[in-house]
Length: 166
Picture 1: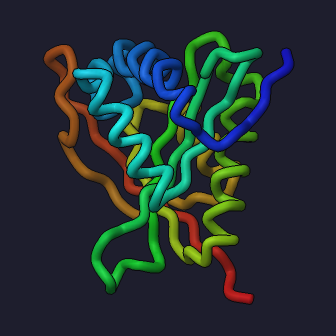
Picture 2: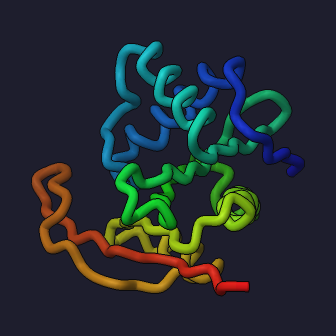
Picture 3: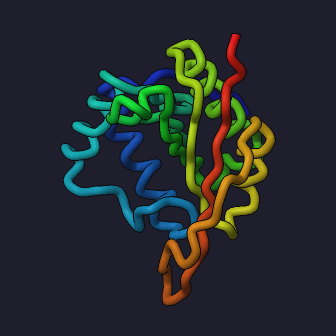
């Protein structure tokens, strides 16, 4: 399988929204159960990230099959930190797409000067946790009964990666 990792652009927004919606509708990984409507809102979000933050997508030919974004924290005392979010469309997981996406995004964050990257992941998302640990994230805490999906409460883990000072 061949894929490319590229910064998101305006013309990729519809594909990004479709990929986001597919992953969200699985109800297993994201804080959303579907992509936020209307599509224009997704475009505004992507463009705001593009202007101030870091977002990359994985493309199979011209189809968006995954994304990874680091959103900078707004408050001055947290300006050294960002929050990571990502998703990979089913069928592309376990094939190196997620690893390539997250490494590209983390490299860009390091070059931007960020020192801490945070994320939250549902406790039952074992493959996602394994990916995050593989690239250096460590567990920092548990949010009990954090999510409520299909009548079941789920815990979420807080994880973070600290870049070494040079």
